[in-house]
Image (tube, rainbow, N blue to C red; front, side):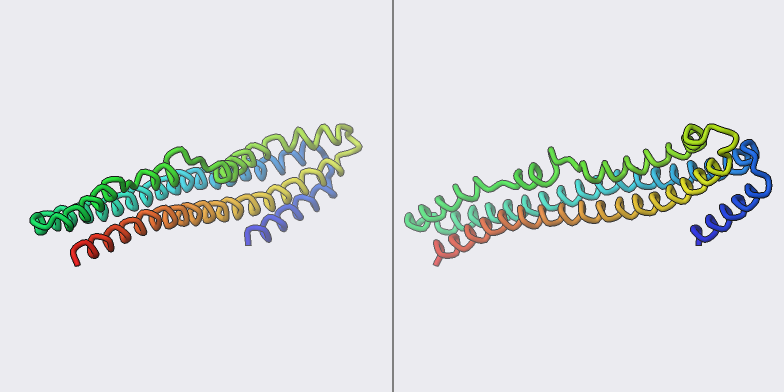
Length: 220
């Protein structure tokens, strides 16, 4: 709907331009439209910047929650072994078996989850997608100057008008593309983080389960 309104507005201005092709009139007609673009694109960037911050916060919180969950499971396993040792303190063979598993449990760590999935991880693709929207918001202000440099002569007023008209339409289309791209990259970034957490936590869980199984064998 916005594109349709933009097209009709530009067409109306273009039609007026054909009736009285005067550069000052063209500039007066189009400057508010360009200012509107600056405001709209700046709002898109502000929203993307906020989403960027929220996305990183979400990744951090998911990472810390996963680390906390793994630490709880590791602590539970260690306590299980301590309890088993107390129960089996009079059986040297069982104690030796459990002590070996206790050593293995003490070596367990969730540090790799945090270091691999959060600490030291950068998000250049998401930052680039965000910054592209910021750059776009600066372009409309230079449109009149750019079209003037391309069509400096009074006899080129019609070309000047055509230049501005097409640049505004191109900017609106580019804004749609960049906004969609940011959304796509944000989704991909979150998916990558979830995949990393799943992979790293699975490695720790497998070690926990293996030790827990060995503890069961020790007690059997």
